[in-house]
Length: 223
Image (cartoon, rainbow, N blue to C red; front, side):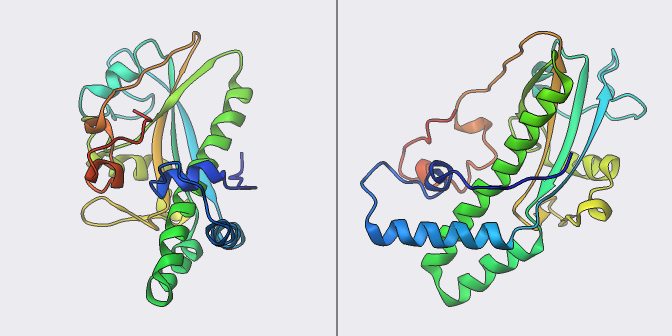
């Protein structure tokens, strides 16, 4: 399956802008339209994925990989298979945001939010298509390194198993962050029965250290 990005949900862009529901001005609406259109025009979404059987000891079939921490084991409880996913908007979208940070910071903020919404949309679209492909089996939500106690260092194993750098052009920094930044890695459980898991609270979120809502003593409402 190919990466797809046909639109950017406005509600998602506003979420990443920490919008609190106040009426949007006509000027802001135009800026949102323009910046979302720029991301759609510039983004070159790519993804790679692989399906594994879960062994009894928690290993992914054909590998020696057992995800770190305890949360992933709980998350995948009852699943027979697991999908590893890596996706990105590509370097051009990253460069678009960086250029805006020099020329027009207001645009840069909106572009950054639209980029975050865009890569989530790429992953959401993939998951919908994967669910159709694997039906009548069910998919869990996505779970990424950095959530709960799933170590960010596991990025390196995911990159090796999916050959991420070569196949979609994403690289890791020494601190295990992805470049381009508008990129995602995640695992998704596959089960014969509906399976829902969610750690509640800000501490389970990988964005807790930079969250605009949390800085104001609020939450985004998603956890």
